[in-house]
Image (cartoon, rainbow, N blue to C red):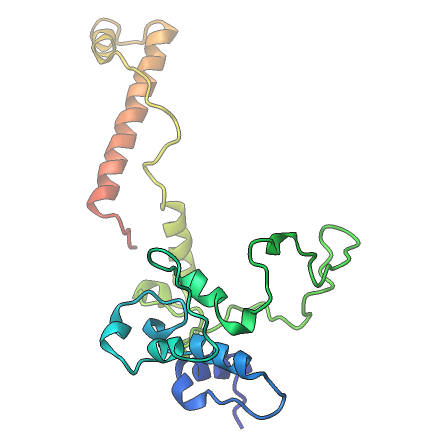
Length: 223
């Protein structure tokens, strides 16, 4: 017997909402509440607050029908109305003072004993990542190299290490290349410390430029 993840089942029901969305008689939900859920659980272009133009050419669309609904108080202010105003105008929110809502006391204020108190969170949350809605494993990848069970983790670590190769947070400093060349010609054994430092900076800059050019030519490095 195969046990399905209840969260995966929920996601599948959301994707197939036309077949799975039903409103049972119990527990009781007001007509305005059901109407609001219907206007939110629908096609994106029909959704309450949507500014999509698709419904204009679809007189039987949900959003057009909702504007004729007794639960929808259409806002007739100046200019175009935004989606937030459409949602707030629904009768389910009747009585809410949207202007002063931020001044209302919170309905629930958790009491914490310390900043890291997590008593109000569920204790049965699994550590593993959730699988996507399609049902593929959470760690699935299209890269055949990363799929390798033996070398995949090592390749991933190498890619992470080289993700910012060639990038630097340092500002480029002025380098006197002519002076460096003169030093190489007339003082092949070195010279004063300042010239040696200039030579080192020149080599570092050239190396960074070469690395950056290499990254640009093949941004996605594979091994």
